[in-house]
Image (cartoon, rainbow, N blue to C red):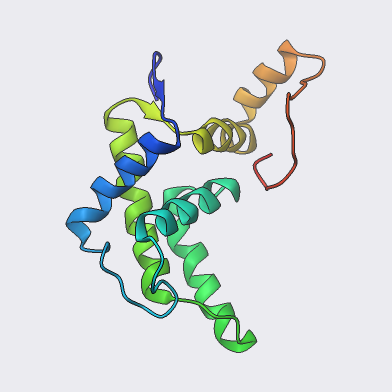
Length: 145
């Protein structure tokens, strides 16, 4: 992301997801797991779950395949087609955001946390600047928080 980026609200994010889904022909998914449910909302929820779990587009396929593999032996319901499609949508969605220099709310936690986890010099530089970090409205409801 470059400086001066814009932040999408939920409605803007939904519109971007809808644009990404359209050429993939996913809006008409009639699988049992998604029947009668809004496919755009389902996809937005899946993308939010990726980000809340600190899963990047590059890591999403391995994560999904592990979910699918684990679902079989445990009897947990899984929709492999929808899950695999969500990986493609996630990659397209993030590519679109990057191209227009925007981020959604999930990105505001995902990317700094991932940078802190994977880049020692970045982490040391920020840690040296602050004695403590306070978070307003901190909920601790997902991995990224």
